[in-house]
Image (cartoon, rainbow, N blue to C red; front, side, top):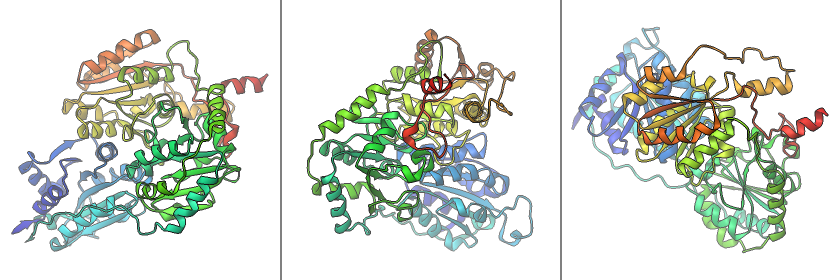
Length: 561
């Protein structure tokens, strides 16, 4: 059948099972939006307040559902406004397809109105970028984009389409997409046996899980391995929920703001099994002394990550779930009761602590956990709010903690929360923000209310850029250059102006009722939680230091004395 390019775009989205897209229309993409109008019963379009919000919405949808997220924008500034969201997805390996439209083919390369080479702009931050100049290539390009986005190590793909292509016609034949198979071709029996031998000989094993274990749906296998070899488990920011936060083998997050039990335990272990991790600088600290007493096994789908940041003793390249399914039969059941007790002693000796007096960031997160029983989807912004959420909310399952890890994108969380809510309408979705981050993309509150979303925005309001101020306190002799935000913004009135319910909490004793009410109202609610400007995230490892040198407030006080 003969279809226009715009019709082909919609038919290809339907082929791929896409039910939700996030975007913002404009001149060059109008033909596609006209087709969206005709198919609004099949594909729901979420009109965001800014294209960056559309990219983060697609990202949050993808992280929380495991599907490919889709966003759309027009040419020029519309397309460039997607860039931060695309880069965020790229750094955290999130499957996303961004569809943009450009000026007509005769106008390309002439500095035409709203013309940008967006395929060139995003080349370093995508798995692939396409520009379609011929309608006969459109369907196969879109199909290829989805396959690339979800094959191997997931990531974003951009498809830019000239406007004339969206109007031109060609023959279109529907194709049923083949299911993407997990990557197994580089898994060898030799590598598996080497890993099994190391595990079987270990007396102090430690398992470290990251976002790759989420992407491959490997949580059941990770849990089976941990109990089979009686090993403690730590995680990266991206690995939250792979291993339950309340499990006795769980030691908390690893790295710069990880627990002392995790940091000291990894330093003392004799075998570290890294599953779907990239050993980022925020995790390993001083690379030369990271896990210095241990052999290291690295399981990852991307061979480029092997030996990139730390040298390993055994690597298995392949989908984490498939690797573990093949590895588990080769691993002998083992008891490491003395080792488990040693780690338990560290957990008792070095628990996460905070000032119990007054309203604090950790108090907010713990109350959120209590009120939701750990069953909510938590999105975050970046900074202190993000670290407190990762430390104090005990995640039961994967795809319930959505946060910008690699890029550290302020303004990510609210858009991601909107995407998560669209993908999981029956789940409680809460975005945890700092006031500095919230101001980046607070216009997306209007998107939430426009779509009648039951969504809770929690602002941990300290009137400063909290994490930057913390560094200024510790390393810049309290020279607070441009980190004090004491402005006149009233977030409760702002929420009400955007059609949401606004609440303010200044006392710890009022917190539980406010959160309970916000969830029960079943609408868009903002809670402004006012805390002290100098609350800090502890433990902390100084940049480039050994992770076992993590310190907290008590350590600082002792040092000053």
